[in-house]
Image 1 (cartoon, one colour):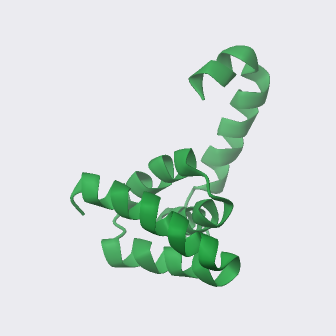
Image 2 (cartoon, rainbow, N blue to C red):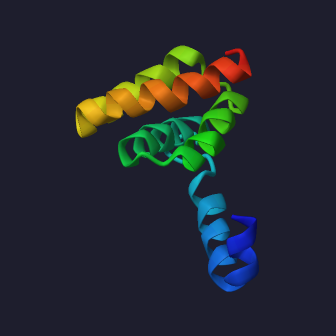
Length: 99
C-alpha cells in the first residue's frame, strides 16, 4: 500500500480517510466492523486484507472464536473456496499471533 500511496497519493489518502470514517464506533462497534471485514476478506480471498483486519479485530478485543465465526459467514456466502482460503490464511495469522 505504501508503494501505491507514492503513485496515487490523492486516491490513497481518500481511501484511508474513508476507512477511518467507516471503522469508527457507530450503530456497529469498530470490533464488529473489523469482524465483518475479516469475513468479507475471506470471501474475496484478499490475504493482505486479512493481515490487516485479523490483527485489528484482535486489538479491538475480538477472540479467536469470534474471528473463526466471522470466517463461517464467508463460508456460507462463498462456499467451498472460502473454507480452503480461510483455513490457509486466517488460521496461519491466528497461530502466528498465538491467539
